[in-house]
Length: 499
Image 1 (cartoon, rainbow, N blue to C red):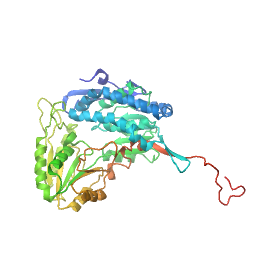
Image 2: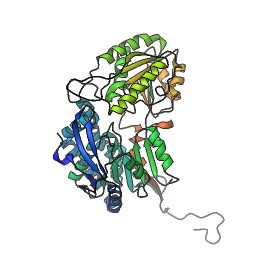
Image 3: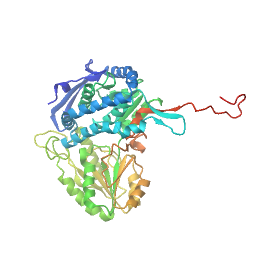
Image 4: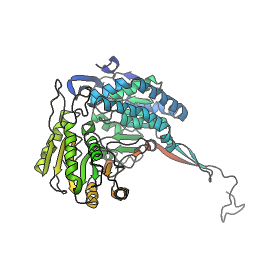
């Protein structure tokens, strides 16, 4: 059952959980069992301007506090995350539908993110003094940063933007997904218990319209959004020429894994199954397209089908479960409709997907799906061209690496890709051709290192990667040119020749 604090917490504004005159409420049914109400979160139109004003008031003192003091407070926040890790993990499992083992890895990532951003991530934006010129480069905070988070990683992804934003001296207003508001409340509790000053970090609950309002508000100096490419486009269009607002977009992908004949068959099949079906396919980095050369295609498809059939789908708190439900009934039905469209367009269903019944639970469960294209050129509108955000893998058989690379690039997205081969030269050829922000060699697309940049090209982002470079998306560089050791004469200057 939810803790009393999280039952009706209101918004976290100006250093406290506050109740405004409610405009509505978010009543969250667990996607794993709709009888499980994970929280009731009132939301209020008045909370948004109140949070932004609180952040603006707090900014001057927070900025002047200095990076070392801010780092110490973030260490305290990290300690509170550790203290509440079990409770946060359980809520992620119930609110998102992730198996508990996976929810725990998300909280672990939140905890370790502080180490990364206070360590190697900080180096990216540390003051740099030039050795051969009397000058410096400093990275300064933008001011008030809006962080709009997704449902699939309600803790890890916004945390990866919030931590560097606060470290660099910004104040933050976080608007979580309306599907997963509870995790943001836990984050607010951790910041509160860590002793952050009022207004430095704020949470505003509400529907998607609140995010749209936040993204265009005059008090917002920088916006960090994680979500779909369609919403990303709307955010860019809504800026109305406000080029002074820094916008960092982390968007979706139609990610390909390219498998060559010389791959390690067993390792590749297991890695592909993980990349396609973990989090019920609800990752922006999920493998949704498998492009395999003909020599190994039959054996790989057979083994992959066998592995996928054996994956256990069930309630996220039950032992031995690999895959939980999708986030909503609507998401599940969209996926099933897309799969039906695929089969009408020439995709053969080895595993058709569809509803799954879990004993004693009424949730949004589906089976992992595997569809094989009739030809490498087979297309199905609404299936092959859209990010399905569900556990479905489309397989395309190609004759060679060159055709595979061409097909991998034939997409609107450019987030991540993987190449499975024992040949380094073949991998390097792929790395030279594939247009993605993250490229994996014999590794799952559904994974990234916090010590590397993370972001995509094409419609998967706007060239402001997160990961180790997140601090650059919430700061600006200032060049300081200091006095020279002695004045230099200016050419053709009358008089003394000195400025």
